Image 1: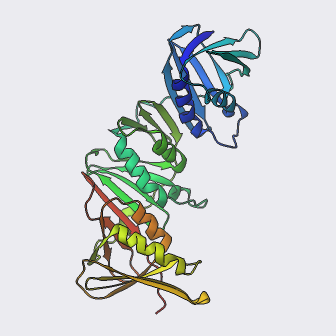
Image 2: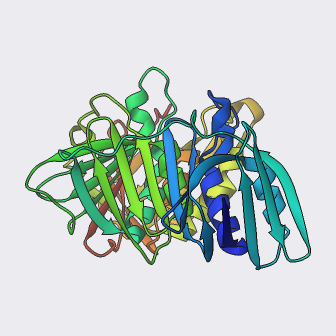
Length: 375
């Protein structure tokens, strides 16, 4: 079997696919790429058993068809130092071992491939699956905005993913660890037949890193698995099983106090004040009154404290409330508007943070649970 492929095209695909391969694989065969030659194309697969990514490259020349496995590190390390040029692969599978030779402009590589019969294969999605088509830019933005709020809870694994809730009103994308919550609604994507799935953190991170914003993605999902098709390939993953909590029930609907403040100014103030907070609690106190937004912290054990005052848009009764500083920084860092609006009630009720200007056709909301103030 012989075929010729572009070195840069192959290297680019392999570096995208290798992201799915774990450091500890349950099956030794998964430390390899699966190469399949068919109809003048090279199909490459990488997997960690729960997640599978496939991609295709057109071949400039091809003699014969077949499949074999290539050691991951061997082929990636061999290609990364080569400039753009055609690579000629020669595969001899006349014996149990796959003798492989890669011929390039000034030299060649010889190594041994592996029989592909033990490589796990994925089953195609059934006809009863739900299908969503959306721009990859929307998918990337929502995953990036939601990942920080996912949990790492062995006892409640359902909280460890990003929840996609398709309703007749919108597609809601939700994540929460019980202390903070992100809910983003996109009103251009909806369905009269409600459906939902819970995407684990690893495939979500993979999608964020490998998708191109100038593209479109098709998501097919059923109760157990999802398949995300994009121009460079397809990602197949196992979904998190279990019923996701009713996220709408924890979002307060009557927080009367609305405070508008400059997002970057508040971020800068938090960076200066947070080092003086208790290392264990990271408690940041807000004292808000007419046009005045005071941010303060204190560590009684080390007799340290800090305070900074910002301007804000607010006219109402005085508010004192405490939040975890690192969580506030994450929330502000995952919003893009120049100003943010805090919707608050009393020191025991969750605070809502929304951008002053919502993204087009979207409704972004972030929630943070308060911390007890010892006045």
